[in-house]
Image (cartoon, rainbow, N blue to C red; front, side):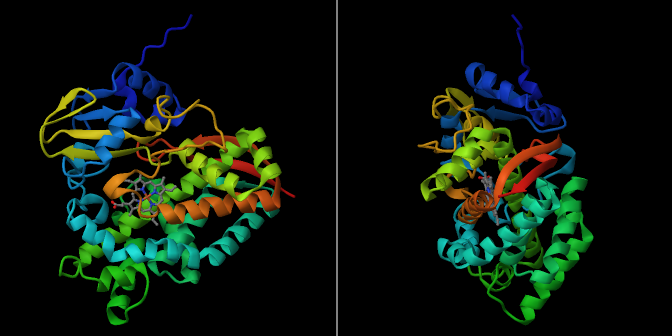
Length: 395
Ligand code: HEM
């Protein structure tokens, strides 16, 4: 019998995330040490939470678990996140609600529906190009391209500039440096911001510039940080779509079921299962504002807690056969998009886009199969492939 002993300290080892072994560690932690203290080192000290119920409790209580001191683990020597206390993801109520309200209209169900035809046409064209090419890198050619076009449209980037935006953001993500250090991208946003100050427009940049938050306009720095926040957060959508196609390639029976049944309800549950299975956002972080208790452990005011989302989404106390990729899964109360006050503002759009991608694949593709090695990301923040070749054969 092989006995594997895990060290919870390895939960922040990017290689364990890249190899997928972190899922075994999370399973072990859920059972043996679901609320686990990590000593400070390169990273600050923090509590690791791996069970669904504990993670949900923290998400649902923004008064006790603040977002204002950062929502992602950062090496201590980088200091505080520059967006702390300023951007939507990094503020608490009531300012958080006001910031969310500033751009809420762009993320509404109504807005997503009004864009549906345009998004569907875009998805068809991207899938057709991939099919014609024979094989493609699902990360760049499908995931990043679709999410890049989407975020470009949302911010108000004209269609002719969206490929350029995609190139800059891809380079910035690949370098692993903060988006704000990518000068060409920031210069582009600065020009756009000044253009909106001259001439208002009905897009997210126009809203950042024109809509007051608690009676005041955002500063120029806050506007640029807000753009960075949106572009960075939307990377998740591209990764989920790319990982979703890989999951279909790796589970031919599930793919065949989708092709065979093709009904709207299955497409809906399939999109949710892809979100659960791929869980492209790996963690959220909060800081306790007061002494409290989670999962029977005392958390002191000022302590950080890290919520491992893919672990919550494989918790067997909530999901039947959590290790099974089941496109018909119901119920499926996954936390891939967070929950509570900070639940993903892009979730409506991400769900529509995922459903439309699955629908397009089913309509136009007969075979989805791996066409080479998958190079995984070495990241504790986002989960998915860095590159993955897949062959899509036309129907
Ligand atoms: C499958 C795709 C996506 C996944 C898995 C995902 C995941 C998440 C998660 C887990 C959160 C909660 C973070 C927290 O509570 O600290 C979040 C928040 C957020 N997401 Fe997404 N996201 C996705 C798509 C998008 C898209 C397409 C956009 C933008 C167009 C976006 C923008 C945001 C923003 C701005 C927040 C912060 C909301 C707030 O603090 O109120 N996300 N996302």
